[in-house]
Amino acid sequence: MLATAVDDFRRTPAAEDHPWPAELPASWFGGLPTARPPTPYTRVTPTLVVEVAVDIATSHGRWRHLARLQDVRGDLRPTDVPKDLDLE
Image (tube, rainbow, N blue to C red):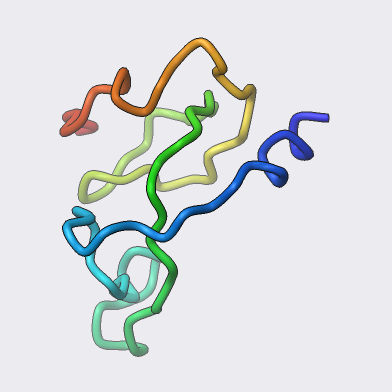
């Protein structure tokens, strides 16, 4: 049921001022920065807040292991989520 709620949510392409780069470097996926080309992806406007479970291991400001989806937080809006959290 949880996966259906997330899958059914509408994905709206983000505006040009989206804070993430248009392509993600290979190092974001555990590879060496020059080992393979950057990965293109579709940036979207945040419209849904979800709760995830993660362990405490981080590297370069990101979690080193998979984040697991726990719940859709209908009580929160994307603007309620703090930005620029110090993960290390």
